[in-house]
Amino acid sequence: MSPKKYTHLFFDLDNTIWDFNSNSFDALYVALDKLQLLDLIGSYDAFFKIYSEVNENLWELYRHGLITKKVLSAQRFEESFEKHGTPLSISGAIVNATYLTEMPLQTKLVDGARKVLDYLHGRYDMAIITNGFKEVQYDKIIKSGLSKYFRKIFISEEVGAQKPKKEIFEYAIKSMNAPKNSSLMIGDSWDADIVGAMNFGIDQIYYNPKIDREKWTSHFFLPLSQNISDILADTPPILDRSPTNMNIKSTKTALIYDLHQLIEIL
Image (cartoon, rainbow, N blue to C red; front, side, top):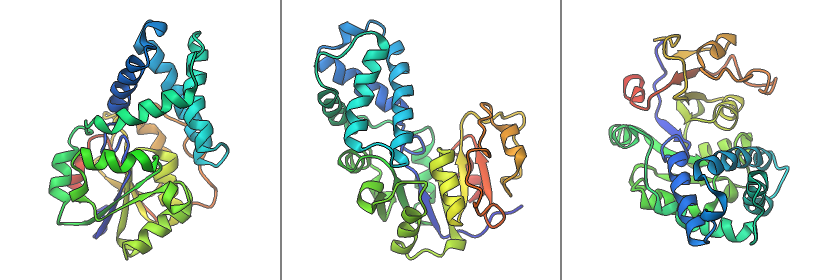
């Protein structure tokens, strides 16, 4: 099925355009080194794996309003060190502050992001919708040379609603004066980006490099159905975790494993 004619593209930032995984790895290493904590943890790779799992779990709670930003910021480091068997001798808040200072200094982009944005720029009206912290998101965008591509940046803290809540999508759409039927959300988080946009009623492109390419179909846009999980390498229980009132029939979902595919379908 051919895609609709879109006029407005809404991008997630972290791990969709800005390479959060690589940049976070490098930023935390520098932060721990500055705080003289590297020698305490032994294998940094092993520690970062623990941290990544803890951080994602806490972000899930934060997205749904179950913990505060302050709790998330400190606890992700205190819990990570505790699980690693080396309790912190300083507060998690201090580690967090040093880490957030280093984050915007890392400027790696997801493979193909720059080329794709160069192609899309001028052809579409584009914006970013992100759940990240406002004190670092703007700096990340500026220092990575991304500002020129996007007319507006919508950060959940400033909007007062986190993805996947409808309110942040509604705010962005209205601020951009974008018709819903010609707007498209592009992101790597099923819960925050895809379910959120779907429930709001706009089409989505789900970027997932882990898609099983042997099962991937050349039909880019398709109604959401059970077979989506068949072409995901990690096959998460995505439908079971989705709201029952999603606009499944009124929106379409595309699956891509490479950002360069955006050039093919837009």
